[in-house]
Length: 126
Image (tube, rainbow, N blue to C red; front, side, top):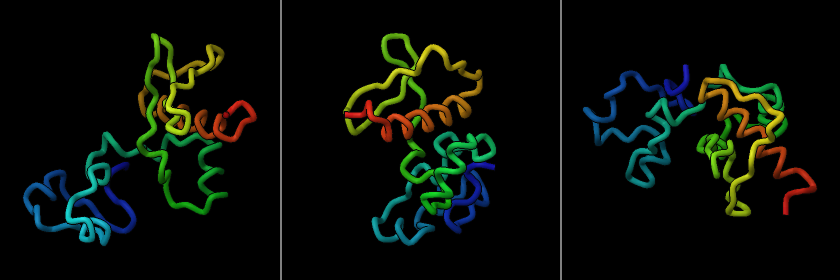
């Protein structure tokens, strides 16, 4: 289940870090002195059961254990059209009309992540 473990730190209870505020769990949290939000909010963490085959292969090729920098990429909308935001060009990249989007937001976000990577690697990226 998404949001229960992150890089070796186990989240035992939804209120774990509210009731134990000084208990910064990871080395990075201890270093910066604050909690890293997406580690504890399941709404901010991708559900890896819904990962696309392309993203599975991408993570494997990159040698990562998770989606890393893609965790905060979500499907949004620009001018009423589904789109994903590309921080490199500081603009929205619209999802082609030919792609049928599922009803589930997690599935939509996985498609957005996949399309963003493909766009970043394409000849059309500036």
